[in-house]
Length: 254
Ligand SMILES: Nc1ncnc2c1ncn2[C@@H]1O[C@H](COP(=O)(O)OP(=O)(O)OP(=O)(O)O)[C@@H](O)[C@H]1O
Ligand SMILES: [Mg+2]
View 1: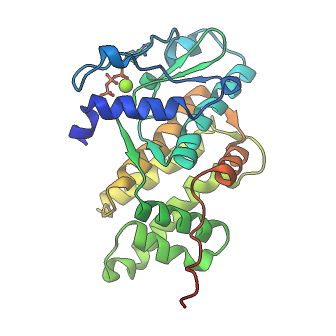
View 2: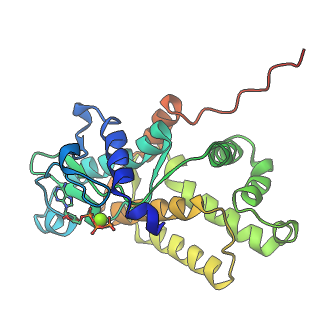
């Protein structure tokens, strides 16, 4: 992770990839890179004129404006995940700029993870198990966390992980806009994660670190914004047009 965060050529590449992911109407601005002034150790990009979350909230923005920014922040993460196989692991107040014209500045692409084929397959299987085949959920959880057979057979551990998965999906399967200002929702998530840490249920695949950071970072941002976002609808759109297509069945052998 340290090497990844300090590789500015990689960060420039991530910036380019992210920049190509959004249309002008979507109002999400990723700064352009100036390659002629960039090296492995120096990254030069376009300046984005905007304020951080605290300053934005101090201006007492309307609910509508907070909801619109909440929508953009959610889309910023889901578009890269589904459309570019890129997990943006750092959705936190330092990395979003609220622009005066209502657009969202989206910066800092050092902490990202590119989905490998294997991890993508796990994600697709996890989505399918959760949405369509709950009987497979425990198996997928065991796989995505690389649990040993003994760990996978530990009912207390599995029960906690299943609760965690339900918590993560709650806003997405919710009908219509989800109210992220609900303090109970965020607190439950923090308690669940605290429980997994206290019980040392920490075994996982490395990309899951990014996934968890992304999951909590996004929910924390939306909670502070007190935004209401139909994240289920964003998810369904991005899923249907994105790169996370289910595996094709193997062609019949001759
Ligand atoms: N293109 C930009 N336009 C305007 N402000 C920027 C831009 N890039 C960075 N900043 C400002 O500098 C701050 C820090 O930049 P950045 O988030 O890239 O690095 P960091 O968070 O300190 O480091 P790390 O990449 O390790 O997280 C941002 O929160 C923002 O205020
Ligand atoms: Mg930053």
